[in-house]
Image 1 (cartoon, helix red, strand yellow):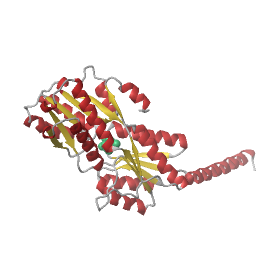
Image 2 (cartoon, helix red, strand yellow):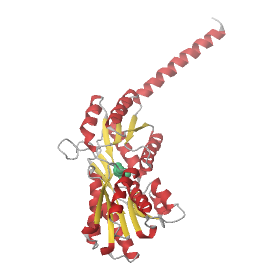
Image 3 (cartoon, helix red, strand yellow):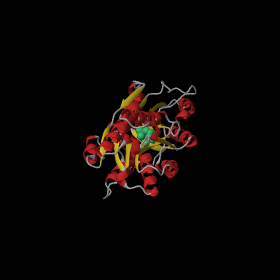
Image 4 (spheres, helix red, strand yellow):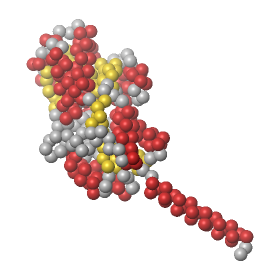
Length: 330
Ligand code: FCA
């Protein structure tokens, strides 16, 4: 045997050994999916980014996928299965898809945790068996209502002469909890119930809120001062944009959202203040990291996460947004 062929054989042997080591390792590797209903929204971009960063630190892979409707979610699950994923975190496009999603996941033996929007079973109740992490909707809604009442006070508005635009999404329990909390806090502050006008939106984004809000302003031209609230800041921004289009000035509008994501930062960074007064910020970084970590520990150590984890929020305005952002790791 020539020296060259001996080396060639050694090199080949080494390559085979490396290749088999690689596949043994791949079998041990953990891959998780992170499926979100609105992949273009800053809240969800940040959640997926935070989960990916945690995976890089702890040595697991995160596959980020969009699930904007039921069909896309089911394809995403098939896709994850073909990539060898052992489970996924999901914020579903419709909470009533819970049973169908679980059915597909169980066929593949995948573990599932929900984030933000909790699955609802065929009985209309939350699916307790699927661990969930989400915000404390009612309490955060109350913070919104209190922030609005305080700002009305600061501007010296008489509640009798103020209209409230309540952008609702009653199909989604967390959304209802949030707008209910805000309503109760406003009523407690002395806001007249008859001055609250509903704008039911079809979705949880700016466009659907804008469409829902516009006719309400048009119908209630008798009010000069408006307050606006909804399940999230994207929707409040839709309401604020509709108020501008209707011709209301920024100083006549107090919109308070929820999330504290890039949508709010962009608004606070504008040179002139708008009717978007503030937002109750919740850490999307923490939601992304914690939900992925819970799932990872469940897969690798067998510890099923608790049934429901709730998180709180902090009021963020044009004046303090940069420091709140830093505190929340956003
Ligand atoms: C829902 C909303 C999001 C965010 C999240 C925590 O999914 O649509 O904007 O508020 O809850």
